[in-house]
Length: 77
Image (cartoon, rainbow, N blue to C red; front, side, top):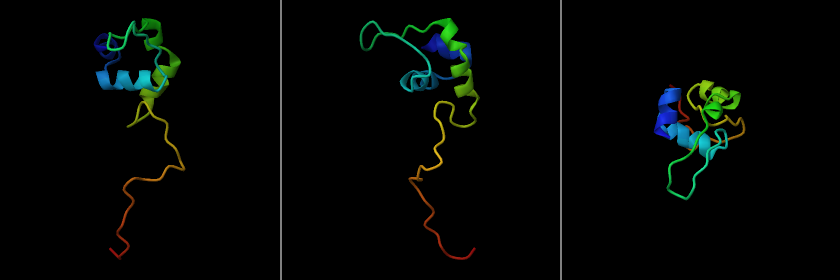
């Protein structure tokens, strides 16, 4: 995972998120073992597109999603 992160210039967290979201294929022999990630998969269009998304590289924006912290201020500025 660390080698993959270095290769792409991102953090381990980003790699973990790409794997969790099904964007980056990876295998573990057993739970807790290091992930096996193919170099070709690191440079796939799917991964490149996910990393190109500004601000949230691993998640798609959902127009209908409600904010957890909506503005509660209703007064005049």
